[in-house]
Structures are given as structure tokens and as C-alpha cells.
Length: 272
Image (tube, rainbow, N blue to C red; front, side):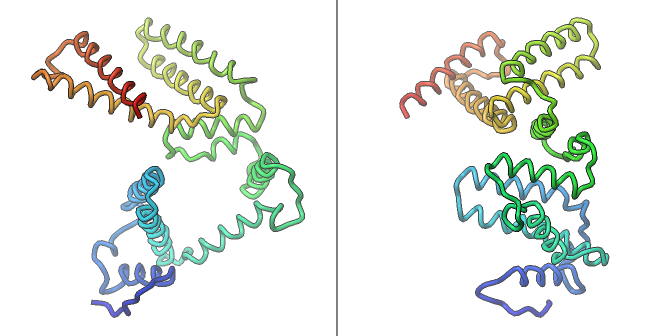
């Protein structure tokens, strides 16, 4: 058992001390053996739980989940501190310097008239500080670990800032039909590799259309997935209500229940 003074209120300094103790001699065996790689997925999970708390508008849950994300930051920083690479203070120092440099309209003499001008300045300063000489560099710097739709939308947005984009939303939407036609050809030809490529192009064109329409593609698909699950649940409820099993029914019959479920859900929305 390590010695530690219990408190009524803790601070970031206490969190740093606790993680140091957990990783040190006499600390927790599990915490001591963790690496960046072993807890990599935990960071993503904790971040997603923060987003869930935001969606639920649950302030108490958000406070808790933000703490879990902060723990991840502190934990990873501690691992590097043990390697004499950097510590949590260096993390704070770097992000503070970044914020000051990228907000010259607040901390410097630069004058801005609009949010668009602020974003333009941010992009140019970011390219300079990161040593990005080409617009391509801004595209390749988008993390490959992002969800595919999110990454596609961000890449498209950065290409737009370089002047490479559709003229209007109508052109972006029209591209969907063109990509669909190319997908149909690949399917008809029985070319699986080309089919995969054309399907990807179709998805990418949908993301571009979403961007031009002011829609977040990731959120739109998430909402559609939630809608599908809700409709599926009502369909199953209707089927089970007649002592039937979905997997033993032909799709034609299931479609009838599917349409009934759609009508039920629409009526529920109208009554809300």
C-alpha cells in the first residue's frame, strides 16, 4: 500500500501524482504493464463516451467522461515521462503555444473581419508551422484512423480550400448518379476489385454532396442507422406478435411488416 493523503477536493496535480504512484514501485500491477499500444483502444472508447454524454445532454455524465479522457492524456504522458521524452507539462506548454500562434487576431496585431478570415488565417498558420508546402500535405495529414466518412469529409473540405471542388451542391449531387452508373457497370462485368473501387467512389461522392449541403455525413449515417434499428425493432415486434420467426419468413412477407412498422413510426412522430 502506497502512502497518499486523502482529500475532499483534488486537482490536476493530484491526478498526476496518482498516476505516477499507480505506475511506480508498489503501485498497480495492471497499470505498470500498460503501454501506448495496449491502451490505444481505451482512448477511442472514452472519447466516444464523451460524445454519448453530449448527445444525452447529461452534465454529470459528461463531467465523468471528460475525466476519463483526461486520465488517458495523463497516462500516455506519464509513459513518455518515464522514457525521459516529455511530460504532461510539455503537453500543456505545446498546446498553449499553438493556441497563441494560431490566434494572432487575439494575441497579436492581426485584424479580422469574419469567422471565414479567422479560419483562413488558421489554415495558413497551420501549414507554415507544420512545414506543409503543398496543399497535398494538408490532405495526407488527415488521420487515417478517423472513421472513413469523417476522414472523407475532412479531406474534401481541405481540397475545397485549395480550389479543387464542385461549383455547387447540384453538381455534387449529380456526381452521385454518375458514380452509381460506374458501379452498375462494374457489377455487370463481375469485376469484384473494380466494384469495390466504384462503391468507394460512390460513397465518397455522397460525402461530397453532404458537405455541399451543409450536412455532416458521419452524423447523417449514424442517424439513419439508429432509424433502421428502430424500424427493425418494430418490425420484429409485429412479427413476434403473430408467433412468427423473422428468419423463417420470405423477404416479401417481411417487407409487408417493414412497411407497417414505417407507418407506425410515422404516426408516433405526428402525435408527438
